[in-house]
Image (cartoon, rainbow, N blue to C red):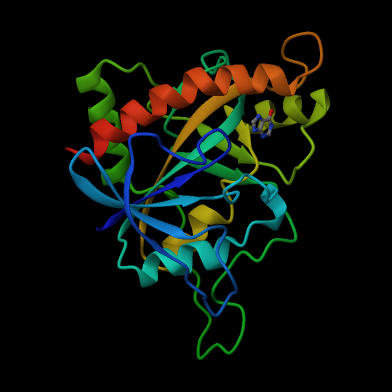
Length: 244
Ligand code: HPA
């Protein structure tokens, strides 16, 4: 049981998951988003955590990222595949598309973003040149190739604060900064995993075009429709990845 899946919006549970145990952990940082589910998927034992709680009730800026990552470490997890709903910015990132980001820019604020905050014996600065674990990304990419799931192998994820969606000017700015995708939960999750030396990768599922890229408002109905298609692909990809 060394691999964990963190499910985001549209992936509060996986139907094919055979849950064998549930662990309610309390951590020095408070309570995680949901019980950790110990489960079997495709013959492998994994840990599943619903990032927004189950039912989905915790907004991105209120998630206790530290408790979630700490809890996974306590359970002996060494690798995390995080699934996230995102908006698409660059041309290839249309609705229901899947990308495996290799870079991230953090625009979020006011979140508890480090384990190295208090009672320090020495100050620690983790290297974050490559925010995602290369070997884990490569495994996901190989699984996609072997199962014929079309994905983008690289993308830069911009993490906004939410919970509101962006203005069209904000999306233009993100595009100028080099972001291909925009989401609200990528940070501090990725950095906290790295602080605890956990290998971490992200499967981003596009729910909608970023604000202003196509005309009209972004509706929850559109997001839900695209996520249904996209998350089904993401589950296939996860299933293929864990058996590699
Ligand atoms: N912006 C930020 N986060 C998101 C979006 C978006 O357009 N869609 C899904 N998550």
